[in-house]
Length: 289
Image (cartoon, rainbow, N blue to C red):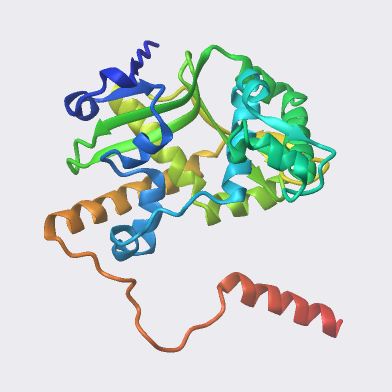
């Protein structure tokens, strides 16, 4: 399988529309680029107004820790060179922290529990054979991708955490619970199946071939930091494809009309979700017996 990324300095609007993978694209430049991403599809799914009027949030400490985890797993050598782990410093009010941020970006200086958690997650993932094999495979990290959708004419974009030379895509996810049943809830809540569909389609539009694999490398945020590798089943992938295309078509319609409606439904009576009703019925029956 031939995957031939270009360098960011070579990127042009024409190449973006025809389809390309881009190396060394700054994060800010990627987010400022034309194109609908998976997070954009999530906003469209909530309502077109949420997409149109969204404001990019300033980076939070949690986001900085997420970036540190990605760097520790995807680029461990860069992590060692660029990050400072103050494991004996309890918080960021300490003089050691204030001294460290004079020579390093604040987001690259981790204290106590932050440093311990990142180090523990790194150790756990590296001890998971399948995850380690994926991370060791030849390929590209933080690889941006752009292509025009032939159905809607909309520019699509995504950023692969890891794309191997064999066409295998892996995305890193930190989670509260890596048990299959519990992580499946996260897949639905955070629409990871839509991400699978979106990334897979972008790849196929660029290369003319499907991804060999799309999988999630999952690691728990708290000890024991269980790490696992999950791949969605065929039904989950079909559901993801449906919603990805539905939301993309909604975006295209709004872009053409200039109308970005708020969520429908209006005021009225609501009920708790079906799963909560079923849980109530089970609990009620158990309390009677």
